Image 1 (cartoon, rainbow, N blue to C red):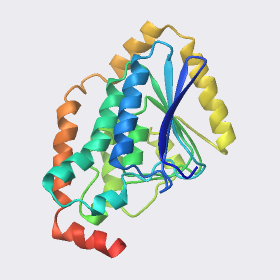
Image 2: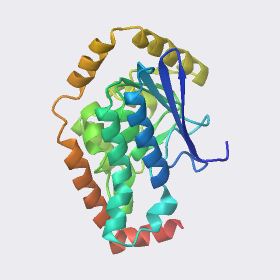
Image 3: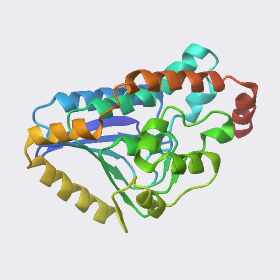
Image 4: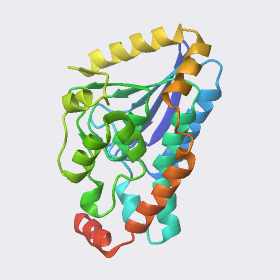
Amino acid sequence: MSQTYVKQTIENNIGYITFFTPEHNAMPSPILKQLEQTIINAGQNNDIKVIVLKSGGERTFCAGASFTELVAIDTLEDGKLFFSGFANVINAMRNCPKLIIGRVQGKAVGGGVGLASATDYCLATKYAAIKLSEISIGIGPFVIEPAVSRKIGQTAFAEMTINAEAFYDANYAKAKGLYADVFETVDALDIAVQELALKLASYNPDALLELKKVLWQDTNHWDTLLIERAQISGTLVLSNFTKQKLDSYS
């Protein structure tokens, strides 16, 4: 489990897409690009009727963007490209013609909350606390905000963003609508994910496609919006405040 990867397997018309990095599944730009393309390819694969998005390991689902890459940003162009990574993955999930089930086995931070929010149906364990910590280092969860607010509402998004150093437990995430259900163990989570995926894979694919369209109605402007948000974060990451904060963590 020491190598970074994005991989896809297909079983019973279910496409399982798994990402992993040793740094608590924090995502560098190349892995985000690979994840984006894998989701696009799965959407075009006729052998796949439904997609399950998951991460490797038993602990953190996703710690957000790569901190190592974040601290190295020194131009506006690099900043925009860096923050466009999660924007492009979220848009790939939104535009994918297949329903995407999220399988969240552990904590989700920043961009990890964005990924969970961009799934069509998300299941988690009781260990899957969520956190939006970006404002505490002088940037903000601007790229993922449309996806997160769409799932949990603007009030909850504001609460989490302002109380940036706090984790909110899985039951909070369920109560706000991010998780459809929360399970005691990873094994129970996997059973529930598989059962749901098998049911969906047996349904009329044309009906599932129309459902996907309905679920993401009025979001076509996200292709532009999320990139505009990436530019905002890309500008803020160059500020003296953020540079000093990042240096203090190094």
